[in-house]
Length: 296
Image 1 (cartoon, helix red, strand yellow):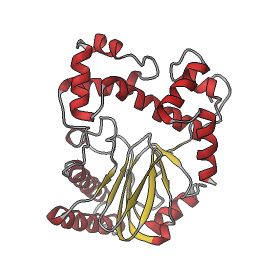
Image 2 (cartoon, one colour; image 1 turned 90 degrees about the vertical axis):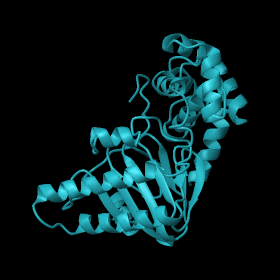
Image 3 (tube, helix red, strand yellow; image 1 turned 180 degrees about the vertical axis):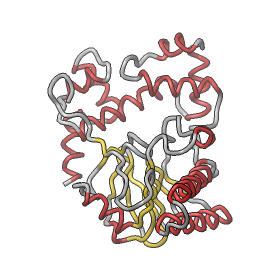
């Protein structure tokens, strides 16, 4: 609850599967649905995950949304949903066959997390479609991971570590697919520092000048670095992050527009409404009503 008595965005924590190795879960789609049901969740409802979720489709078509953007997974496609993102299955899980790999932050070693850039904000495009040898390697790796997860051989400690290492290999391969970074890894140190600062402070300031001063860059340097990497200026980058969080709060809390604006650093509800309308083309109330209707 926040100080005004409203519920916060509901997060789905990672829970180990009963009778399975701790630390990760490797499930087919029926298993993913059963897991959600056992935790009192509707697998097709929107969820704000507190863990990483890797999804791949072997056959059929699966439609998903991540942070209000629709995606379609077909055979061989991968979706990587990061902690804090809002994910929803938009089509029945039974319409496709595939695998989901779930693991919490901190599950992988520090060296793997650094090499896979798990400490950085989520890339803008969570959908990946590997081709050729990469696709074959990923299919073989998932087969091996599924088999190891389901069939324990040797001491439990060794089994746990084998699963962890296989998940690490999978994460590293996905993180370095061509185009997988989508602006997350490319670019200068100035952009990477700015990106981390925005993720940390976007509720406190929306001014490029403030970030530039704190980071020791000029506004022009941050703007050029952000445009070169993310395809937009520094101000637009900040506003995009603020808008995304506003949408998350409108859809997944009962906070008023006034309270949301306050939480996101706006001086009053009028300023927040003007910002939201200018950036999205509709009022906060209009967006909430439309998004709530789409979820029914």
